[in-house]
Each structure stands twice: as C-alpha cells, then as structure tokens.
Length: 197
Image 1 (cartoon, rainbow, N blue to C red):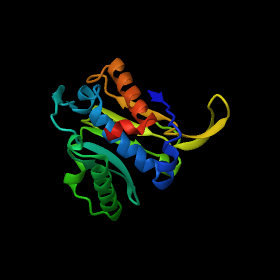
Image 2: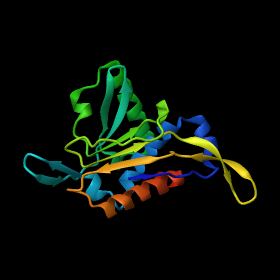
Image 3: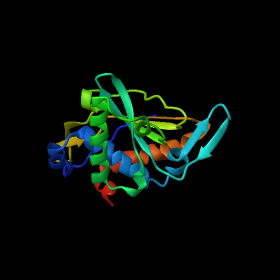
Image 4: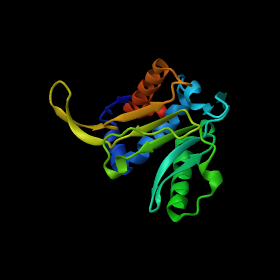
C-alpha cells in the first residue's frame, strides 16, 4: 500500500536546518508510538515454526542504516518512553556504530517494527520487505519542495515524503487496520506538530 502526503509551508524553514530523511524517520517513530491503530501492528510478532502470533508489551523500532558493507537494521528500544530528540540522538549513535562495524548483535535484534527510508540516497518509492518475525515495515521515498497552488498563487511546499510504502503480514494485521495506520502516519507527517504532543 502506498500513499503520499504534503507538508504545510510552516515546515519549510524547519526542513532547511535538518535533513528530510532524519525528520521523516524520527517523526514516523514518534507518530507510530502515538497511533491508536498501532497496537495490533507494532506490538506483534509471527513465529512461523509454531504458527503462533505473540503480542508484545514494548515498542522497539528498527531503522535501516546504510553502511559500507550493506544495509543494517539497528534498534531503538522503548520508543514509547522517548521523545523525538532522544530517539534522534540514539539513532545517530547507532547509525555511526553500524557504519563503523562496531554495532553489537543486541543492538540489532528484538524489534517489533522497522522503518526504512531511501530518501537520503534519492529513492522515490520501493516495496519494503518484512523482516521476520515482525509483521510490518514502513518505507519512505525522498521529500521535495514543489510549487503548490494555494488558491491564489503557487507557493513552495515540502512534499514529505513523496511516497510511503507499507508492507504487512495478513496473518497478524487486516487490510483495513493497515490502511488506517498508514493514513495516520501520513497525517502526522503532513502536520509534524502532532508528533511533538
């Protein structure tokens, strides 16, 4: 499932000071933790050998880091108890460890959900693959400032990100819940103030 979202003009100044990839990822983590549609998606794992679905009472979110040796999924533990700044700081530290090859196995395992963004390297859209035993993954393309008609004139507006791609395991999540969840994420990214509440 894919959806696009646009950001209002007040975000452009903020965006000029920080990378859009960083803003998307941290905002998405924060909005996922606040989502009323999140619990069956984010806190579930499907164990194929036992054909069993387990519910978790924690919110550990993985993020994909680009390293010289390929992609690595690092883990932010307890996202439900952290603010955007704390998540951003921890993500920078883990990404640096991943690039240096010093990240530990414990810092890469135990996630409930993964966020992947190819926007930083110019990706406009892709289909993310679920990392078992997780039941869903969210991917984002790059953000761009584009002219948007506001009723009187064209004004620059950040289209953030151009596309969201969402894959989920139907054994754990039905399509209606997944669609509502993706709509919620797009809504939060359209108005980033919602992730700061």
